[in-house]
Length: 258
Length: 260
Image (tube, each protein chain N blue to C red):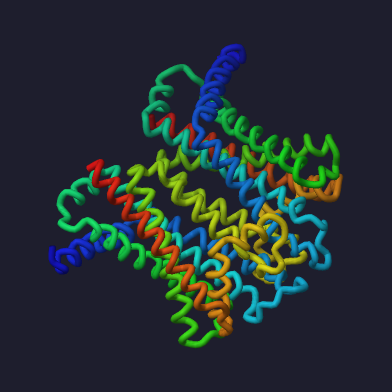
């Protein structure tokens, strides 16, 4: 098994998915529309919240919401790639792919490439709209590299998680099983106000939710005041590693069924 | 055709529509689960917003409860549209057009499914509001008015879904309209009262958005008690939407049955 064949399978799978994505508006819309809704509705409708006592984020409320929406857009790029994998199984394409690919982990790598492209597209659109809406990123170049690297690691973790589900269940009916855990993990964090202003059960959930750390670090990068950088990257990479193992298990399950 | 034959036709189609809705957990569960999930997360996550001067209550749960009713109604649009588009795609509507069935019976029958789902949602959200909230300020009568307003809102959005289904005959088109309806909810006074919205363009959009008044109608009964103006505006917007979308659906049905 040469490195060349691994790369060629990964690139072929990635290219096919990217092509399908950009030629099918029904695939573009869901992953993009919801982050944009949240951004518009909450950066515009809730901007007064930054005058609540204890709200101490210097970069402003639009930047605060952008920090969340960036992660959401990036994660959705990964989760919705899981939907594409499920669709490929339903149509029978994946079965043929499994028979043809000399190194099957290259298939996951290919879907990962597609997820990265989808996330990059989502993030670019959200960022452009944010800048038009008055988003001010006060972080420097290095902060931005940290911010978008973190977002792309989250994208990879979401994609591995989605692919693990899709390859085990091999049906589009598995959509909610991919979407709901990702939705809960994202929303049970300091989404609209800083962690210290959360109350009740969401505060308790945010305390143990690893996304809280990632989100706070991302917001720190946006404001040019990064906090807990190493723990956040460790958590994000840890999630990506765990979900990669989950995806590998999913691939084995699909191989047995093929 | 006399009224005596219309009633059994409506009854049969209404039964079909209601049974069909209840047999699809994939329709009912998200329509109940997602509004409750958003309510649970927002009410805890945004509790500190009640510290803003002028915020009408000290419980964000009470404020956010109205969102569940309107968000649930948006799912009615999806449900009604998906069911009707399936009838178009499978040829069921074509076969019906060959029978002496009256169009009005078909329309009323379809609406029964929308209203059944709307009723389940309204009672569920109300029960959650009573268990986890601080009660309904307008009392028992207010609770019934909330259910009535909620059903009119469900009818209005449900008819939009049915209209799109009849015009396009495509389930994908119905799914495509769903995010647009969500935009209407998000660009309203959903998260804060209109007078506390700081961003000018957003406040203007919320002022012109009828969904703001539907939310405020329900919200007034939960938080304030009996507020005639808020209720009148809420029912006027919901009723206006229901009348317009019903008329559009009726015209689309006439067109669809003629083509068939």
